[in-house]
Amino acid sequence: MLNLILLQDAAGAAQSANSGNNWTFWVMMILIFVVFYFFMIRPQTKRQKELQQKRDAIKKGDKVITAGGIYGEVKDIQENAFIITIAKDVTIKVDKSSVTPIEEETTTPKKD
Image 1: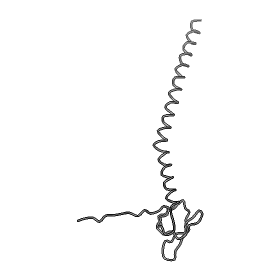
Image 2: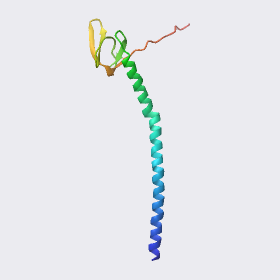
Image 3: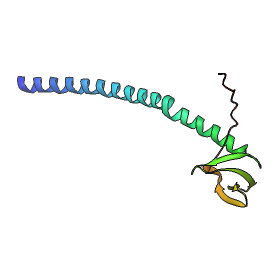
Image 4: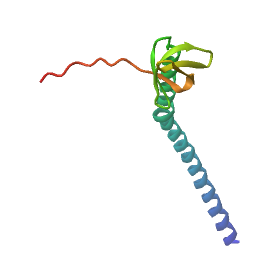
């Protein structure tokens, strides 16, 4: 009889300890997700949004670079593609998602 009572007490103690572990597990999982969101997901979403705004602002005559590393100038804009001139009388059609505008760099001359 005494063994039965001791076994029940041990099972109850293990169950209460297990429920405490579940609570801390969920708190840690939520904290990990919050940190992951603020350091990984949010900055990437912000970068993608900025790049999309730059692509939407591309107009005829702008200099661009494709994902394949081809430099050119926008000749025409279609619904889902750009027509890009890469050399004299050489044009290519490129998907809008694979084009990045080239920002003009302002360089100052070096003084010797």
